[in-house]
Image: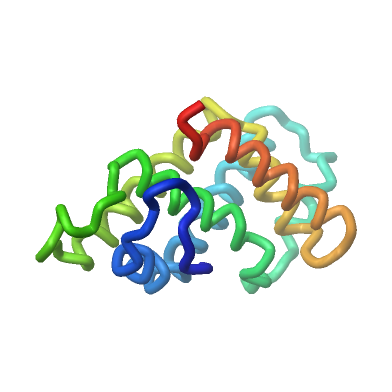
Length: 157
């Protein structure tokens, strides 16, 4: 996670550092829940010929975290914005560990809802996973970030 403001007023660096400290767990939530959701969707629809499915079945659990970093950072910022964590002086003494737990709980719930409300995001996460560090994967990373920006806008437009 890159610790930096993502929207106007996003300057609570201590909170961003707390989210940074949970980066590995947040990626596991994002990756594993999307993998499981995608595999289950394939089984339900009997779309076993989907090339993403074949690769997900045999791929290692190890991923290049950089392929999901922009998506993670956008989601982390969306959580901060949603909760109006923009003026750190208003939250003096706030328990960072508790906020980090709340962040991960929110992420888990959001990702779990995607299969029903945003299945394209699930597919893009899985596409990024199966095409890591190749041209198609870079394109999927860009498309994933755009989909997240549409669903979780950081501007007040």
